Image (cartoon, rainbow, N blue to C red; front, side, top):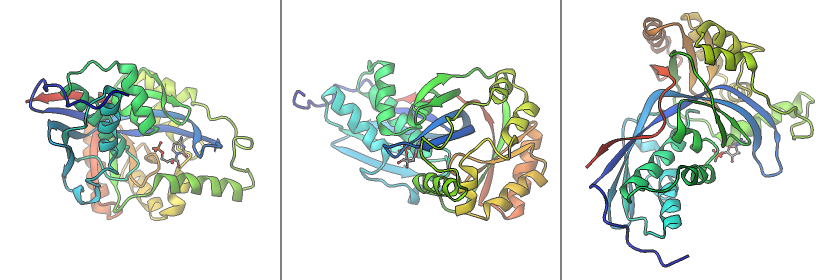
Length: 324
Ligand code: C5P
């Protein structure tokens, strides 16, 4: 590795990247692997709640965060965005001399890949600031090293994630889906939710390792509903067998109040209710924009969540929105 050089003259004073949150339309969880991860069939759908990450030249690496949940986001080297900047700088033989500002709107520790989103955005913002040119494949490889969900945040749209979620195949989506997200008070730890999933499986007598648990498979009916943009068919697939999210029972086990949140959404007229990823955010599929506003209002009034956000999917992946 050559000695780290100063970053090249930046192409602009600052680069801002917008990056979406995600919901898992399906999260089929396989057995616990020897490396501590689980094999997945993970149907990612990017949704229209965004963080923005601005990269600007600086002396050393600095992180600042704004937004209502800023106090809950680490502004130090433990932030995945900082690790993204360092990883890219190292590959390019540069010093990570950059100020990253994260304007946070995605719920924190909510099962919507907010931290992963910031890492993908930081990577693209730094690459652009430092002159661009890192091949897409290399950016995706860095994303995969940073976390299982990070490659999807770069790509956006809809995709099937295999392996631990990092091996992506793009999926066709034939329309716009309307969603409401009910944001909980406080977060849930993703590793804790996976551990609880394993514990529940062992308690049910099924075992928890790859030897005991069947290979996770995408649901063909769910993929077809996405492809044709059919909301009613998607609602049926999301709720077939209880939930398309294998982590839902574990999230509800750790946070029993989520059962009331899910029920409140169904009572308010949602076509399907599920926990988003490892939770505790709950996701409600609705028929149209008016239903989204009505369900969001009802969820806020129900007192079963901190706030409710109507939005649409799919949304574009990380992309530059401002320079200078
Ligand atoms: O990859 P990421 O850092 O987001 O994963 C966080 C944690 O979630 C892992 O350390 C692991 O405990 C759990 N995980 C898992 N199987 C996956 C993805 C994540 O067990 N496919």
